Amino acid sequence: MEIKDFSKNIIKGVLYALVISIVFNLIFSIVMTKVDFSETVLNVIYVVISCVALVIGAIVAAKSQGSKGWMIGLTVGTIYYIALYLIYILFGGEAHLGMYEFYRFLMSIGVGTLAGMLGINL
Image (cartoon, rainbow, N blue to C red; front, side, top):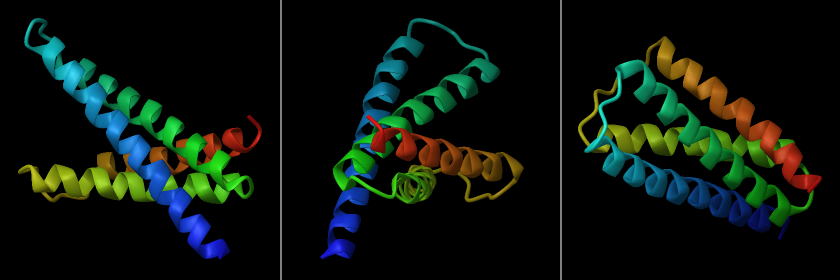
């Protein structure tokens, strides 16, 4: 039963994070039709959107689980990054694993873990 609850809460957290990412990216896409941004600013905004979505998703999952916040957050962060990477490839992105992707993966794990610990204590 505990594995089932764990899996359910992980899926819930990842779905929350993905939906929030999609909504914020759609809003940002609309803004981009009116305002020009440099490549650096675009990357920063996408990272901020990903971090905010991941924090919310990991907190939701950890609160639902009620314990092991760091493990919940770590798992949500890992699956969230993999899901984003697969979506990127699905929409025509190049399947390339370089240092930038590695840093984003580490960031997802770190942010997810910290947010999971925070979610337990809220």
